[in-house]
Image (cartoon, rainbow, N blue to C red; front, side, top):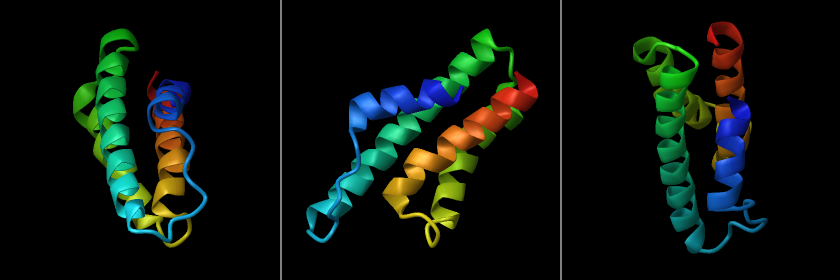
Length: 99
C-alpha cells in the first residue's frame, strides 16, 4: 500500500524542491497537499475494494490520520518532506495489520 501512494505521488508532484525561500513555496505546498489528499482517497477506495480493508475506520485513518500526523510532525520533518514520509508509513502499517 505504501507503493500505491509513493509512485503516483512521485509522478504527479515530482521531487520536492530544495529551496523554499520564495513566495512560490506556499503554492507548491498547497499543490502537494491536494495531490496527497487525492491519492490517499483513491488508495483508501482501492484498499476497500481489493484488499477488503474496511473504509470507515481504516480508510478514514489513512486519509485524515496521515495528513494530520504530517502536520503534527512538521517540527521534525518539513511539511513537504513529511508528505513523502508519513503517508507511506501509515499506509504500510494499515496494509500490514489489516490487509
